Length: 203
Image 1 (tube, rainbow, N blue to C red):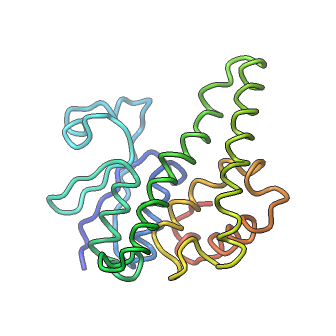
Image 2: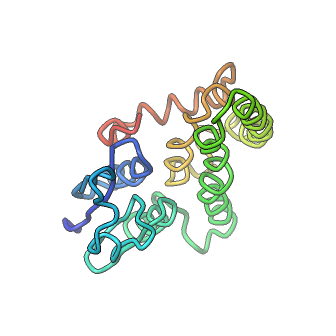
């Protein structure tokens, strides 16, 4: 078990939240390295050497450096939670679904959530953005609800890193995904009650 894992981040509730949550589920010790954007700490030569994009999170695990939250969680689950928090490769069907949901969380869901913070400069633009988010979340509910109506977690095999990725993003679209929608509401209640999520200060 390693004790040299570092998470470079700006706050507990930035995209490092899912990384920290996964580490807590795995029982791995880690160190948070909080950076201040206003002080230029994302743009220092030392940090840019770790992450040329100058963004967070970045994970350092001994000599291994990974950025992008989904990439970090895929790495951690495979290295330290293989067969427990991620399906084994030989379980092709579950592994395929796991990969799908890990990438859906950022590639589809979080892209929609992010629009609410970047396309709201005027009342007109805000109205268009919210209409788009509502439309997309209607599609997401059609995808997620049938699964969460019949099982507790996104994979039939049980809780996994894919739930961590989804659980960290869904609240950003709470009015459109959770409000008045028991399948996702109950799913989030289960995730928010997990001791590791509480320790990681995700919510």
